[in-house]
Length: 66
Image (cartoon, rainbow, N blue to C red; front, side):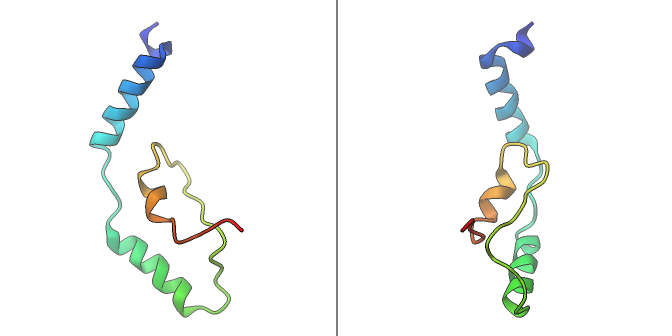
């Protein structure tokens, strides 16, 4: 089927990325402020569950895997 062809998968991800709503910057600012204010908060990793094409993952780059 066309859904199994790599070209069809690339097309589907580009359509998904184009129409997927983005998370507001204020959400990421909230996360970063929390970690800046809380001494026990960790910056070594973040998890983007259901990341799809990774649009929100890019915003989480201040978190680094050691």
